[in-house]
Image 1 (spheres, rainbow over the protein chains, first blue to last red):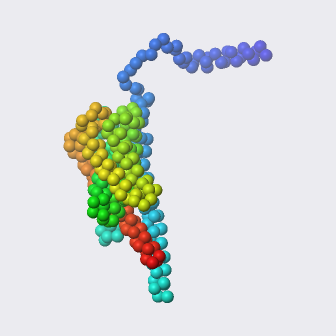
Image 2: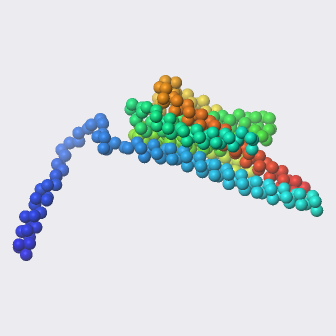
Image 3: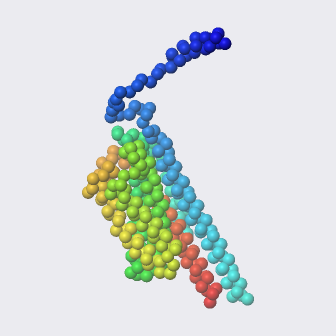
Length: 88
Length: 218
């Protein structure tokens, strides 16, 4: 048991020693510019904007086409009813 | 539908397919970088939004004072397009602002008056749908307010303190940026004309349907 604990301490110490420990901060230091890796990426915003435009257009055209075909079907149905009524 | 409609749809599709190449070729803006390229769809959609509000307002005025049903159908179609293009402006704008300004939204005069114009168009559609008899005239009155808001939206950035770019940006654009912008403007205007014609056609078909119902009742 003692041997096992000793081995863990001996092998574990170099691994822990390799990890950099964050230092305690006494004050916050302001910078006017963020480092490049921390800045908000532009590409997702750009892609979202253009994708939204295309989706909005396609959705609107689909909505108008659906309403138009429904009204046209109804017009044709009534038209044929009226013609049948006139003949009868 | 008129004969020119289908060829114009083809032309519009080709133009929209070509527009990303022109936009990609245009230079980056020095302070905003890549995200500024939202501008090439944001500004044309904003102009189309304002144009459709004006079309809706003029057609509503002609309906109110002349009683033309054709003008009423045009106003109804334009109001729907005001909502569509307004939604594009109000979504693409904050996506651009998040990167360029660090915030999604500012309650400044340009953004607030644009939102107000969009809500007036929504109000027009809701009144038409749920307002019952006489709602067409009430909605036409709303459309006049929507149209009166348009010049205010346009000039607001030049008279009030705001972080939104001023109208002077467009005339001072360098050639490749200007080319991409004006090509996108042409795309959006053509699309607006096509969608307006399609939406008016739907209203014409609805009018035909109403006439058929009346003749069947008699």
